[in-house]
Image (cartoon, rainbow, N blue to C red; front, top):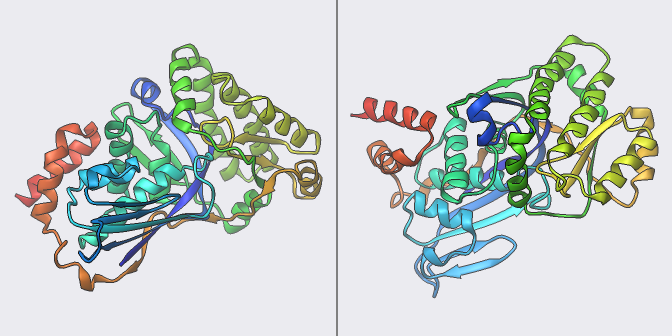
Length: 367
């Protein structure tokens, strides 16, 4: 049995610049952090003693005789991508609701890749997990998504993520003193609106509007650098909250799907009660909202939003990891390095340029 644990993330600044229609022209940057709520995936080889070949447990329970019949798109895509044809059992548990703006879909894909590679006796790097999750979600599943979630959930921590026009990326940890990091955490409140939504649908509307929103997106990109300087400078942390308000005012202009009327009402109530800034997390339309509030004003904001669910959280820095590994059963699944590179070589023309370059280098070394 293998168990992986992959964190959810909150995005502070730069969300929207990580869509390919933007970064392929201008590049992108995102400031985000992972939190101590997780997607946990348990995987094991399923012995051939059942009427079904494989069993997939999430919000549904699927028992199938052929992997092509699996309804969960990410599970079906990953099993096909890794050419796993034997029986398998996958159990998923999420600490927070899906489709709520915390990168849960990408955390699932990253965690599933991590689990299935471990079942084959291989431990993937965080970069490999992020690259292949991007490929599966965007290129195979054709989802309207950016690339920040796969990177953030694979790496973990408070990071500035730079994305180049060719799709290559750099993850730079924002290293703060424990006091400064706690000061940031002490000014944040996370609420669940109770509304889940299909992020790809909203993201599709945002992607369509990108050519008409270049000024807003350039400003949102610049705010990543400004926010980083605020955190490092030791100046009043309230400036971070004020900047969060500014980026929300810009984000809600990208598409009218981002902030429906009930979200505007929540935000107005929070600001009236003392919140300095805030934003909806993820593509918009519902899910979780993050607010920046002085500690002394938190009771008033919580009272104003008492109809919402307050979710206490802390930052985490581990990223996707294997938390349980029982290797005794996996001789039949073990892959040699040459098998692994042959599998990746099969997909190499489908992958983004930065991933192709990485795999070509690996293949050259292996041969």
